[in-house]
Length: 351
Image (cartoon, rainbow, N blue to C red; front, side, top):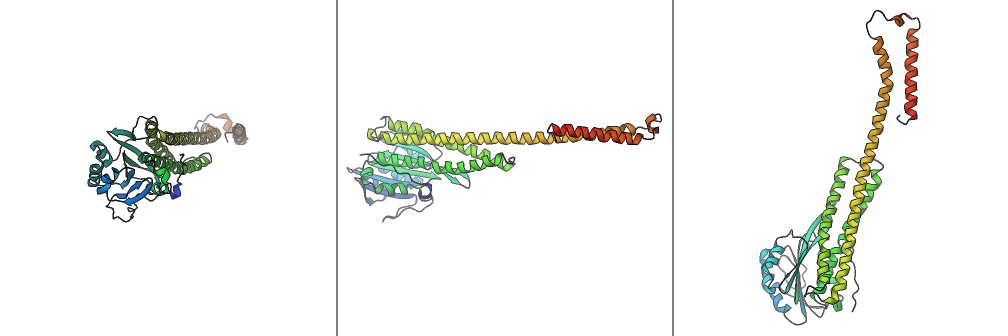
């Protein structure tokens, strides 16, 4: 059965990362956003983490646990419930991992980077996902939208959710990639403002610093999103036993979205580079114009300066000093020379 894909807009993406855990009847401990068990796509219970392993071993049941910056003790409990590999748990405890896909025995470990706009900067976070038979655990660190909205949406589609833990993995990765787009849209709006401004007025130091920060953030976003292409391709080519071949088209769709994100990032970085180059050219043009004006006036003022310097010499034998109209002749020469130079410079566009 085909699954209709629904994109979540940024305005209603999810709760803030700091939102308290959702309470569906159980008092979850700190760090647990949700801990539920599903049978045939229908949520049958909200369970404590200590009972998750027992539920996951029941036929037709899937345990979905969402954690946010959990303490080591909580991750240790999750590890014991699902027999997770110590190296994967260590990576999930210590954030700052590169996006990747690792297979530890019967379990799959996926790392993805998340992004949000915060104070006109891109804030990055991480999501670590454990996938195995009958369970999926997501561990969020840093800036990221809660996956509560993903959970709530697909709970309305039991037929899709009944596909199992690999479908939930797809839903989370698709949500992560879709949330790159609001970040790019916000940057795109700012880039357009920079484009409109750069040709009108020269960029100030603060403008140049902002342009540099945008380019650097975009490069970091590209480095965060790019590796997901390899992750999704591995999930698509059938080399991962935890993912059924029937879900390959869905992960290919996520791959296409990541490539679209990469293209938009590259486009925005090029526009920012062109804006910076255009600003430099505008600044150089204005500097050249000012230099020409200064040089023109310096040449004009050099004429009276030179004449005055000549007649300021204290020589006794200067015959023209005795001329009756000498003063007027010299003044006329100075005015004529200055006007001629002014006309020539004006004609050549220097003034």
